[in-house]
Amino acid sequence: MTDWVPKTRLGQMVLNGEITTMSDALATKLPLREPEIVDILLPDLQDEVIDLNMVQRMTDSGRRVRFAVTCIVGNGDGFIGYGRAKGKEVGPSIKKAIDNAKLNIIEIKRGCGSWQCGCGNPHSLPFEVTGSTGSVTVTLKPAPRGVSLAVGDVAKSLLTLAGVQDAWGFARGNTKTKVNYAMATFEALKMTSRMRVTDEQAKTLNIVSGPTGIKFAESEIDAEEE
Image (cartoon, rainbow, N blue to C red; front, side, top):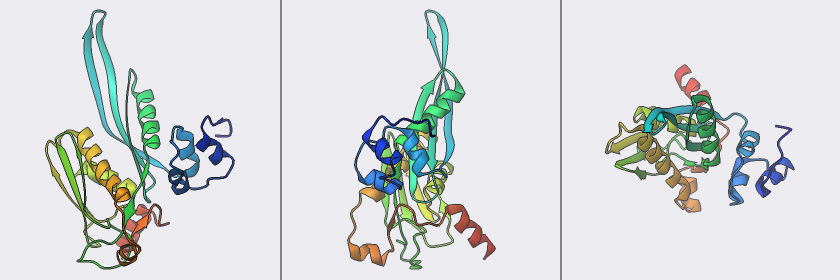
């Protein structure tokens, strides 16, 4: 990382120490065009391959094979990213998809929005959100503590890396298309950051934007020990 030479203003600010958190970087509204910025600000970032598809195409010179990869990244504490890439080889395609996911990283809001809970901890979503891509529409609702993630496997992967511990999920459309299912879930999570809340609502529902300092894995282990 020491050999990295930033080419953007945001990269220079991060390398010079003017910006030290991912929240501050996103708050600048400057374009995020270098994955190294995310590597510095979120060193504990995890990645997961959601879909790997081989695409074959016949040309005049013969059969052409390419790989389409869909990846997600997250730190398990308020940040999630989604990216896709295509290439002739699997390894470089996965790396490119992960880099694209880093460039599309967002900060989500969490809270205790379920009327059945009221614990005051940001373990779930603060309110109901919906996202759509293609034929797939995903609706995520706050759930009380202990419900865990009552969603499909693809949505569960995104919510886990985003740091959401409890949620109800409902999906319509062709959810077997993992790419659309993942993108619709990502769009739903993106709505949490776009939704404006008042100070009173944020205090009542304990809405937190971005990191809380409690990792998903740690809180999950504590719940199992109890």
